[in-house]
Each structure stands twice: as structure tokens, then as C-alpha cells.
Image (cartoon, rainbow, N blue to C red):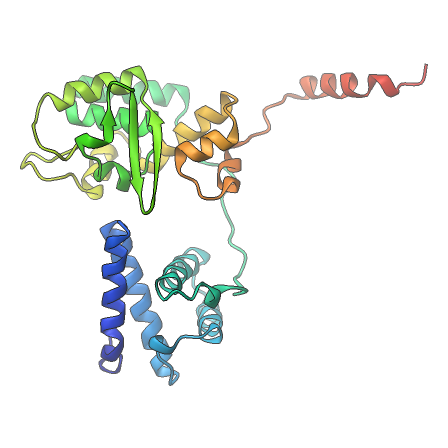
Length: 282
């Protein structure tokens, strides 16, 4: 930050401490801190300060970023940081009505095909690393976020009930364990006695970056495995409300992205004919 922005540093640091208490991941805390520091620099250049924030400041900053032709992804990330900061200040109304340039989202969600799914499991089991096998099965069969996976401890698994409990902020959710996920978790847990569920060779809790690096060997990433979990359930006609709860989506519209139109033309014709047959004039 610039010299004239050091005055607000304690407030931003307090915000970062609050994020830790909210169990946000280190990468999220780093990103939010960086975005707020940029915002603070811009504010002070315009004779304003983050400690006395108002809605016009936020809207003007967003418009400034748009004039700078920042990507919608970057602006969305900035708004995420400001939105959370407003919550920290207990002033959520600060972001009400803020106008954003429409975000262009990809229509297709990247998931594993049946062939890719089979190849991934074959490759990871062939490599024989019990931890990596357990990680892949846990991500694929529970759909949890990589940040959630890295925070898991033995206490979060109940083998007698075949379920995994995911703590997140003030909420928890319970996800049933598949037979395969349970078997591979049990096999792996016999290899160490640490309280943290997934650990490094040195015995410390595994990091998100380490998980991402491991998965990169198999040409996948945590998000793709999470999307595959959700898509598989939706394709299996599991109620969207249930899928949303299992995935930890706060907005069911996020879950609705997995609903696809899978009807062929011939099937669609058949449905239309059956639906309107009563209206045909004899």
C-alpha cells in the first residue's frame, strides 16, 4: 500500500483476523486483503477513506474498474471482497443496489466424462498412494470444496453412520459416504495417527495448493471433481434441493446450472403429442 493508506491498515488487518475466525481459506484472505488495499489506495487518491465507506464510493470504484476495462472476473472478485467487508462492518446495505456490468458465464460446466472418470480412478489406484486415492474418492463422492477437504479432521468422519460432517462458518452439513469412499478413507487412516485427516509426509495438514498439484498429474482440478459430483446427482434425478444442501450451495440457482436439456427430438415430439392429445378435435 502507499504511504498515505497506512492509517486504514489496522482496519483491514482486523478484517483479515475476522476472516480467519470465519474459517476462510488463506488464499481467500490474501485475495480479499489485496483487493481492499487497492480499493483503499483509490479512495485516498480521491480524498476518501475505507474507514468511512459509503455506497457512492463503492459504485464509483466499480465504474472506475470498468473504465479501466478490467475483466468481469476481476470486478466480481473485487465486489466479493467489498461485500464481505461490508458484512464485517455490519453494514450489508452498503452494497445494496450496486450496479455491475453483466458477467458472462460459461454455459457448460466442466465435468468428467464416464471414460475420464474411469481412467482417473484407475490411474490414481495404480499409483498406489493411499492418501491420494482417498482424496480423489472423497472429492468425487462427496463434492466438497478443496478448502473444506484440507480442514477435515478424524472427528468429522463417522464410520458407524457412514457420513462426513463439513463445518463451514456457522453452518454444518452432513454428506453420506459411498462404500468406495469409506473403504479408501479407512485404508488411508490406518497409515497415520494424526488428528488432521489428510497430511503431508511431515505430518502437517495438507494445503489446497498441494491437493491441486497432486491432481494436476491426472489432468483434473478440484472444481472439476466437485462439478462431476453435482452433475452426477442431478443426472440421476436427485431433488435439486438435496443436491444444493449436499454441495453447500447458498443459492439453489447455482445448483440449477447442472440441469440440462437431454431430450432428443424424437422423444420431445412424443412428449408433446402425449401432452396435447386430449386437445385434438375428433
